[in-house]
Image 1 (cartoon, rainbow, N blue to C red):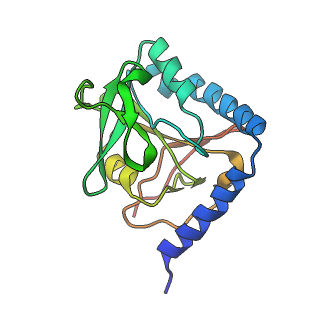
Image 2 (image 1 turned 135 degrees about the vertical axis):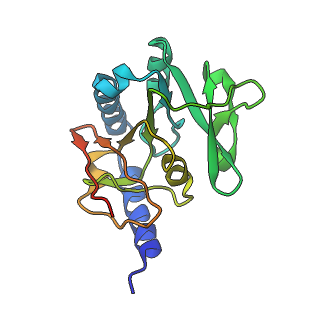
Image 3 (image 1 turned 30 degrees about the vertical axis):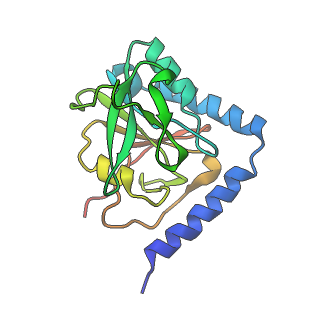
Amino acid sequence: MRNIRLEKKLLREKYKNIRMNMTAEFKNECDTKILERLISLYQYRECRYLFTYVSKGLEVDTRRLIEKALADGKKVAVPKCIEQHQMDFYFIRSFDDLEEGCFGLLEPKTDICQKVKSYYRAMCIVPGMSFDFRGCRIGYGGGYYDRFLADFNGSKIGICYSSCIQWNLPKGIYDTAVDLVVTEKYFRKCALPHG
């Protein structure tokens, strides 16, 4: 019997190792190209609200994207992890609105940040260790984004390094695919078959 959880764990380790072996210079070059592709998207130009994680370590950089979106007059929302592997998004005005939270991630200070209640004209940047050509992803194992994206009706954009793209990843029944994957080399529109 197929063990998707084990397959995902092994793939997570594989793509973590690929990222760990990237030089800082090469990673920065890739991050810059991904940012340039992201801000050229009509989804970015048309969105009023940008939902994004605050990057750390091996992740594709989003800090410059946050700065750019704020400078462009967009409202930027970042996630706060809550119980039962759920997360809420809160609007931030600058990095000063962040504090260290779950897993050492920077999260919004909920006492001064406004909770998001609408996804109208919204675009969500989705993290992942790997994506495939259907828009499926290998995340970090917590299921936070799959739960959130199940109810998110805006544009879902995965960002990833091209060296971490695989043709076909294992997909669990609760996994939510993205609409578009952006790497430093290309865009890939995704069309996951239903069912």
